[in-house]
Image (cartoon, one colour):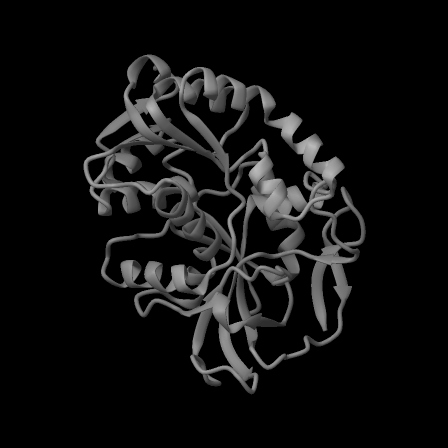
Amino acid sequence: MRAFGITGYKRPLTEIEVPEPVVGPHDVLVDVEAAGLNHLDEKMRAGEFKAILPVPMPLVLGYDVAGTVLEVGDRVSRFVPGDRVYARPAAGGTFTERVAVPEDELSRIPSSLSTVEAAGLPLVALTAWQALVERGNLQPGQKVLVHAGAGAVGSLAIQLAKHLGAHVATTAGGAGVELVRELGADVVVDYRAQDFEKELSGYDLVLDSLGGENLTRSLGVLRRGGKVVGIAGPPDPAFARQAGLHPVLRLAVAALSGSVRRRAKKLDVTYEFLFMHASGDQLRQITALVESGTLRPLPVETFPLDEAPEALAALAAGRIRGKAVVTRA
């Protein structure tokens, strides 16, 4: 079976042959019609997580999938052959022809979206949901800062936060300024001309997708007891424990985030690293919000599966506006 993956870290994405997926009793076999590209694909290719999340080679990339159910395991009850489904499979490997996905990671595609549009949604939508709802426990009337609001995660996070009744500030630049206003942001900080740290204060929650200095500076806009949820790192001890890392690696991970956690403690705020996880239940709730018009995904740019290497290079170079999706059509 054809797939696109890597044979080693920092090696180019190439076509490889992989065996047909094994369908277990709780699995759903999906005919991959479209698969979203994400920055996670490039980070995995570059080996950014190899010390804490080692994987065997060759590795098929792809962490979003949309397609049609071909077969279901004996114990599957939610889906039948012919259903249009999408997911962010925990195991990844969606740059291929067919993939077996556990039933509890899947949802039916929103009726308002095409299969291609749906393929760009799971990972970024689940990231926004888990940052704001699961980790942030965002409540009506609270104030949240969403960095990079015109991006794939940020644009959904703005809409979700408004749905939850929050006051939303965001950072953006260029054409993104008008986009985030259209999405409902209450305060827009143009990072080209303004300093968000000087413009904002007393926030309950920050969703940081940039890391580094931006993360450290974000701590300063929080009220006492506030929280920054970071999706760009550094990983924290809670992540290391959840991932079941070796004790030596846990110490290394703790050191990576030591500086930002000490700074947060000094300010009486907290920092949490989020590495999103698969969840069919959360994806079904997201599906309902898309169907109601509450969440509007960014437009997608499509590439044939054969051009997956070129598409990933374009994404890594910042040449993709909206979401990139590879298709088998």
